[in-house]
Amino acid sequence: MERLMITGGSPLRGEIKVHGAKNSSLPLLAAAVLCRGETVLHNCPELSDVGAACEILSYLGCKVRRQGRSVVIDAADIRSHSVPEPLMREMRSSIVFLGAIAARAGQADLSFPGGCELGPRPIDLHLAGLKKLGLIIEEDRGRLLCRVDGRLKGAQIALSFPSVGATENILLAAATAEGRTVLTNAAREPEIIDLADFLNKCGAKISGAGEGTIVVDGVEALRGCEHRVIPDRIVAATYLSCAACTGGDILVTETEPVHLAGILPIFEEMGCAVKVEGKSIRLKAPARLRAAGDVRTMPYPGFPTDAQAPLMAAAAVAEGTSMFVENIFESRYKHAGELTRMGAKIKLEGRVAVVEGVPALHGAEVSCTDLRGGAALVAAGLAAEGETILREIHHLDRGYERIEEALTPLGAHIRRIAD
Ligand code: UD1
Image 1 (cartoon, rainbow, N blue to C red):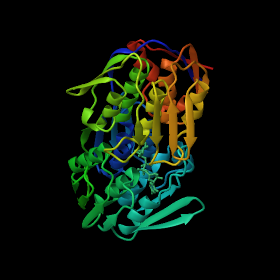
Image 2: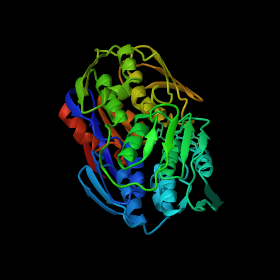
Image 3: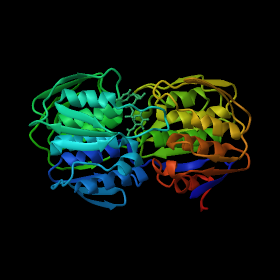
Image 4: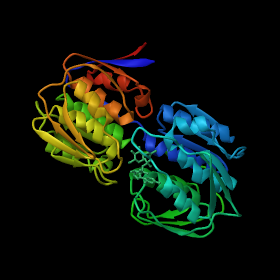
């Protein structure tokens, strides 16, 4: 078991690069299953979730080579259509393989992705959408036994909520279905556009990605392609939160500022000077942050639920009271209890968190409760007086490439230690 030792109190200064997006990489790796040829993904981050997705690909019979941030997948021969339970549990978003495996193999056998640290994470929208495309799904003791009679068929599908995962699964299944699929109330996240761009390069005919209605004209088959994963907007938001918390001044490079349009105004509201320069974002924090006001998580282009926790660390040391309303996941405030151990004043009531800023946090022994909750604790530890010991950091490694190595050049005192 490893932990991070963080000595807080130094303002972060300097330049930091953003790696590729985890939430794009995973559906892109699933999409490689559809391609009868070689797929090359660049800027695919070295994260444990990416490793888990590669393991699933290998299990299915794909040849997978990882060289740093490039992954080469040869899906010419798919030997299996099932994903074993431990692999499904390791990464809950593995459900996004369902649409791709079913479309490629005509059958799929996956288990439910299992319980989750963010509260219930149902997959009813995924399943209803795939059923509309003609997938026959039987549930048997926690497993989803799926088959297709002939070929999947295009359909009209309306989502009752713009679910990111359901939109991805439906796109993957519809890309090689017979005829046209029209998906309304689709998720509009940048990762959806990235997936559609990739599939189109492979020969798919998808239009409207990034808008509420996506039209997919199914094609017979897809070939592989070479693709660069978009930058991770949540990692960028995390670095900005770390700088804001510590009164720092940083330049976040290799990012896509447009993707942070729902986030940057909040840092400005908190008194930070934010300047976009091409693909970089400069943030200069004031000596003391102001409260964030009301932060409501929303589907894109609203404020992302994934950035809620890191921003809460900044609100914890701001002057005044901030209110967070979590509209996407039911149980996404587990980090609040850990922040409280560091001196934060946070009151929770259902989906609302009220954060009364304190002049300073103090170091403590805390644990990552989940991926983004862990990021909040890193930011808080950097801002706090004294030493913080952060445990359960395997959560962080799911979504941040060696976060301690990324932050050290900015003047952060943060070390990884084996127990
Ligand atoms: C994705 C991201 C995750 C991010 C989230 C919100 C990936 C791999 N994961 O998760 O990091 O936090 O988007 O941006 O990209 N819902 C249903 N039924 C369903 C599906 C979803 O009720 O079938 C509900 C969920 O419980 C949740 C909401 O819809 O309340 C949003 O979920 P969704 O957009 O699907 O998020 P994920 O794809 O799980």
